[in-house]
Image (cartoon, rainbow, N blue to C red; front, top):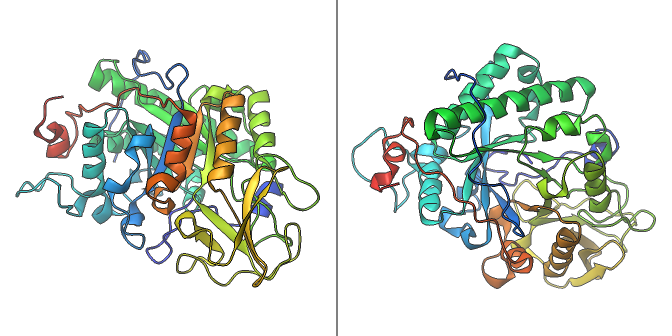
Length: 436
């Protein structure tokens, strides 16, 4: 998952996934006893529903905070914060994050108030106490910045103190480390150190600001391609994380020689599948990650192949898509396309469309494949689901996010945290004038 420019508002794994599947200002915190977790990561028999919301979606997609499916999620991952060369974590778009004036935002002349999406997300927390907000850092495009930072103790310290401080300033409930990918022995060793220090930093923040009553979450999106997780020290990483989100999509695309499913559950015959969800989930569990700490990632977009005769066949690269500059990407709200027939591969458990008149095949998740994935999550006792990303979903009853929530049933309802007296922003510091 990656940040893009305003012209390219889709943040997906847009690099060569074939290659991926086959290769690959700080505030000091003192160490204290880890806080008691009064907000468990998962209620008994309940599921996490984690939706990414991007700061650039207010532009091209015109996606507003009130469109977030708050009735069907437990967590928002707000993407992305950037990383400076010295390790400091900063806003990637100050206007979108803290400056844009929304109609229902704080009015008046207090220049120390937060506006933008940060204010809106905090107001969503106030109105929906079961929805937690996590600040996501990095993303695919900025992931190379993690490498020198994680390898240097001083830069790691700057990363941790600034990330935790930004989380508190913005009134959020945790951090999400989107590093794609720490897939060598050296980078993974340094990733473990970074996660350990982040965990301590979050626990120290809790002791200082909540008396240890609230546990701030730490999560990480993780690869589904075996070569990318082959070097993972799963147990060491898992000890610091509250949950993992397996990015179970982009298995096939324009980098491949043949068409294929991009988010199938099981392997299929011949060339129709390049990877599968089941292999990835099984590998994580075998490596010691509890199934209840895993979220299954779902795409809210599809990938197209032109002038083909079907799955596992040759094709011509697509020249069109839903979004400017993103040929071959079709967001879910635009699918299925006119003239296309919706098909389902009952072996791989994956949906796709085929237009025989144009030869265009699009691999995507629809309500049928989502229902099976819900059943799979229950069967495998997986802890929840994740969606990339919210602006691409349909509203109403055809929403993938809402359909999944209905199918799963009970969602995690642990409360968020609203008291941030140390925030540099007056309205967040004062809880928008409301009693906590």
